Image (cartoon, rainbow, N blue to C red; front, side, top):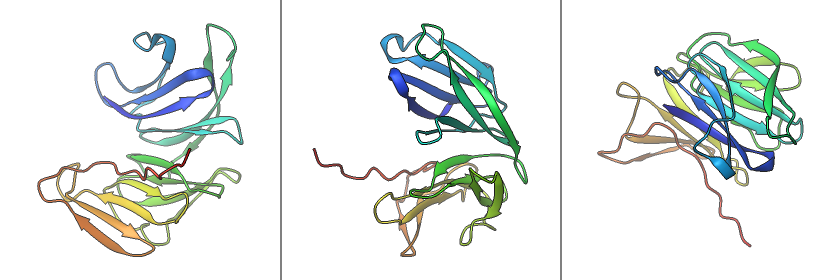
Length: 189
């Protein structure tokens, strides 16, 4: 029940494995042997992972907290992650964790709210436009234009509509069941 994954240095991948009999944990893999987990640790309702190159930290989101991890024994055949800090969410049901380009912030969605989390001050504040919205399953800020795309569930866990900020708008996709939306900016060679 993977909800998020992130590429880490040296061709390793961490997966946020959510609510499932084999889930509720972070799982580390090496691309050279991608079918074999090399490390894991519990994280209830793991939903988000973000590699922070500048700080050399992995940020994670679970049911009740944002955590940061340091890489350990990374040059060895037995790498692991060591928890550095645990920041409790202002409310529960963590859903999405994404960086805000060119800032110290991560966007964090929970069941009832959307927050900015300051990675330096370790403080949460309501998102100015989305803060009071419940059931927002994903938020992503375009790294070049700054436009925000989000999915707010209108049925159980999904919606057929993408919301947009800066400029505001919506894109409706009848028949689709959208959960997470991400910008994939074009990169020239």
